[in-house]
Image (cartoon, rainbow, N blue to C red; front, side):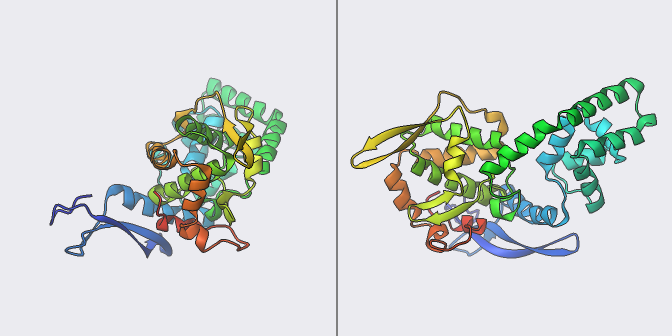
Length: 329
């Protein structure tokens, strides 16, 4: 951002602050642009939005309120329009649509929406609103929900497969990212399309930078992974399981000098529809700035990050607050 006083490029600065949201105080990291000559600070919409999301993510986690993408996914799972869903829930259609656009529901409405993740609860809600639905709509919705209940074992399998890769549910430790195998797979595929010689060690670092930069820029990480600091730098926990999980991604053994390791390759293209515009911008930045590094070079680079220096040899995970001290991106 250019300073309106001097016409010079300003420096981005981060400062821990508090935000009062619905009568409660939450800590977050404020993003601003500093005019070093006048010491004036300026904000932009992206930084303000990222700060707000940091705060509301904490509120959602505290009170068990589903996140925006979860609210949309619940409705789509049942094949219902926003107007029909609002009718079944007893929420005004305009209010419900605001929830899908990012407004935080009240605690009571949020918990009610979360409860219908259980298809049996959803079926009871549909039956309770039967007289408000047309006969054809009622039959269609009941049929869809009943099919989901009948195939509930498939969802148990999906949940088990997710737990093999992800160490925790959505929350502070994974940067409030959606826990999704599909999103994780497409993140890896996107990186493979744009970066050369991606050894597992290199992918570990690229995922770290993508997740932590995403948290810094948007208030949420991307992949749902959690990270720890080991000798070779920051890595996702269970990283070996991550790369073995997807049939579309292969590990090829290669020799580089005295070192033998696995290089990740794939013939598949990433589905970019799973990413927001800002997430694509983050991925493009990471790939452009770090994609040509060798595994050794990016490991050395990651050792200069506070995320590694402060948490190496510690038992805990790297907190996403370390995103605001990133140096490489």
